Length: 151
Image (cartoon, rainbow, N blue to C red):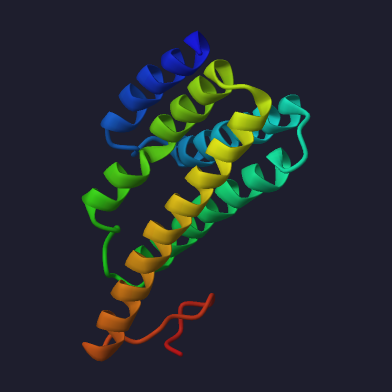
């Protein structure tokens, strides 16, 4: 838990400044790997049936949020609203929360908490994503393929 607090503080400082350096593009993937790895490692350490599927559910929900963010930016729609990031905790908040839950709860309770967190993050992210893309389409914004061409 102490390491997670240190991670949350230092990562918050790292992303508070603009990422414009030559290798600054490596910062977001590093944070994603740290978050995903922490969640999966703590679930594996719980050694309870259902912990790893719950962890993969959380990782999948967060990965979908990252995918959605990239395609919003590629379509010149900007980043998702700030309330969404605050609601789902940001990478540092989720990492800290999962670590504290793992430290305070029994393995079975941790699995339930991880499942609840995965479902909550997935619902919030999916509802906002669907709302955004439907509203954008109705407003005339074209969909964008991987190659950057309109659909």
